[in-house]
Image (cartoon, rainbow, N blue to C red; front, side):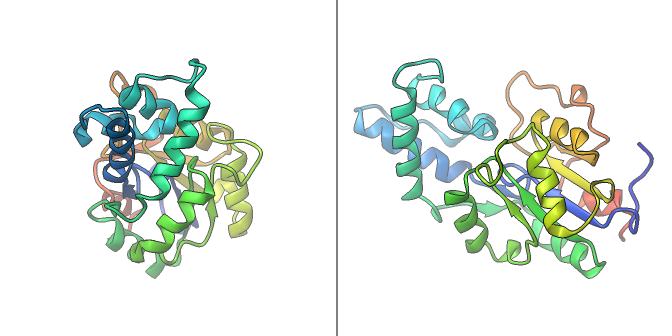
Length: 225
């Protein structure tokens, strides 16, 4: 893909966890509370961090050894959601560089929004609690549309809410499903290599149009100095 340039790009859509915010501390806290109820010792945050992008499906096998195929998974996922709700605000922070990057986008007239597989019950309060995300122009959560990523529907819904054609949007995320969703929606894609890259994942195989090692690098990709 040729270099991205404003004004060709009129909007940037972001994944949330692992792209704009580091939520690993809160998620680890919830899982460790569940472990404590079962007489198990806490695990370090770093044990959970690479799996955050996969949500409960990726985290419960680490924290409690229970995957989606297990008969107890649904009950544990509900317990996890209830426990996590009590941990919101306990440690989630934007990644370094996110706040000034978003400010620069706004200053150049580029609108931005968030498309996440995190359900709205959690996504909306997290966004509301982060001053850096206060000017989010569109929030599409995991239960906003009938499908979640990698289906393109959530990204297309965000573009619709912004009133901007998908061809003039880019999507930034830290998971291969993000890149797949972006391509299917007809958007340019940027892999956030500073995010939650799962063990065994090779971002070079994601077929992203571009990649960045830090949030501020996005401005360089857009030709914003």
